[in-house]
Image 1: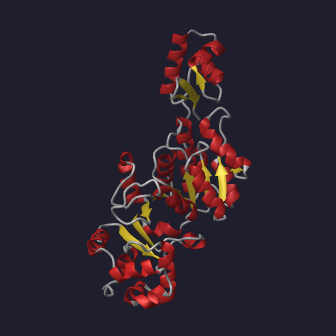
Image 2: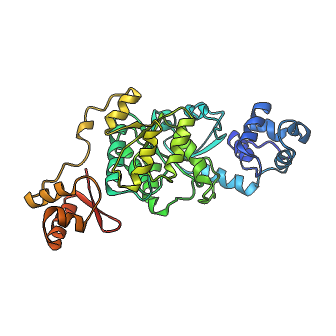
Image 3: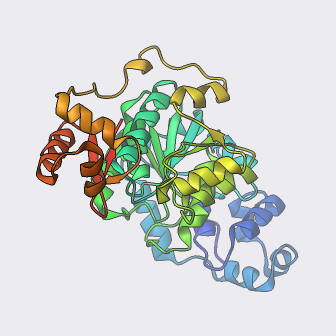
Length: 365
């Protein structure tokens, strides 16, 4: 049996870092013995009355001391915290879900933990319009006082974090690795900004790598910390739908932005809407459902629309709002391919259209 550690944080880390003790068993032991020190000091017989014999044996063996020391060393870094079920600022929203983590690692602004929050999630392979929508919605919602919660993935998640950070509500990333690892590595600069102006949170110990099984588990915390979940773009098999399903199970509101019936990245949102998610066309729709008011300056959020000349405007109208290929645009406009390509380049530089995979183009907001 391991001796009771010297500090409260050390006790929590020593208990949480014991291999083979699932979170539900840990919560049961804490309820029975009152604190980590009580669990760690209990004899095998007493432990076995509460949990399976193999769990009791794991606790008797104790945690890897090197892992505990590494966590304590990390905890000494600027902005690094552990937040436990015993802490008064543990996220109250997570206490409402079926399986709240006994301990969270946090890097950044601890005061964000209990601010009103909204999850914004979607495809990693997002379209330019989807990224625009995610960033714009997140900015408006953040300026209305909501902290934007997402998962630090490429595409919609990253755009949601950027928008949230631009507003007063800031942004929180729930990650599927230890906080000493940034995944994906392409979001390292964004993670640093979140650590400075928002927050990064994980239930996984330091050193935990990006295992596929971690992310569905992480998703329940994205929805659990939030009053609702907004899905911006998602294929029918998207992991974002796991977050949406978790939100429904947790009694949270689910919102979805509709898109083109021809886009695979709209199928998931349309399926959610068919199942009862609230169709939203603006951030104001979300705020009204949540009973919140928009910030006074919200109407002006977003870049000004760049004017284009007559021929380019005509082609933009011919493009419509669905993805379209070059041949179809030539047929609709009556222009030769080289003329259409010249106008598309002009529109792309003006931020009015974006290229998609397969030689198609899509109008942007």
